[in-house]
Image 1: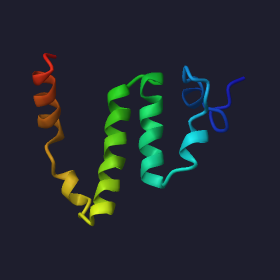
Image 2 (image 1 turned 90 degrees about the horizontal axis):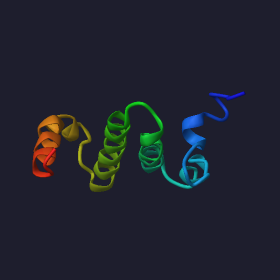
Image 3 (image 1 turned 45 degrees about the horizontal axis):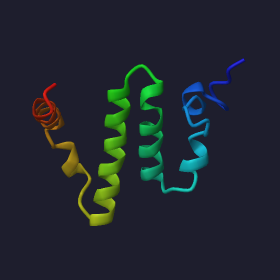
Length: 91
């Protein structure tokens, strides 16, 4: 039986067979969470949502390391950015 607390399927069903926590427990909070969301992006229903969450943690880490107020990133027009990238890539 699947245990959603101690052994969630989306953490342990990666093609590598590696459990995500084996990697992320050796990282800081923001980077570990970003990796977690990237790791499981294709293992859940909404990969884009998990990739956006990963980006959120990466932006917080950048803000922390550059001493930038992380609220700066909240005002970025991500939808416009994503649309521009998709247009450039031909999507």
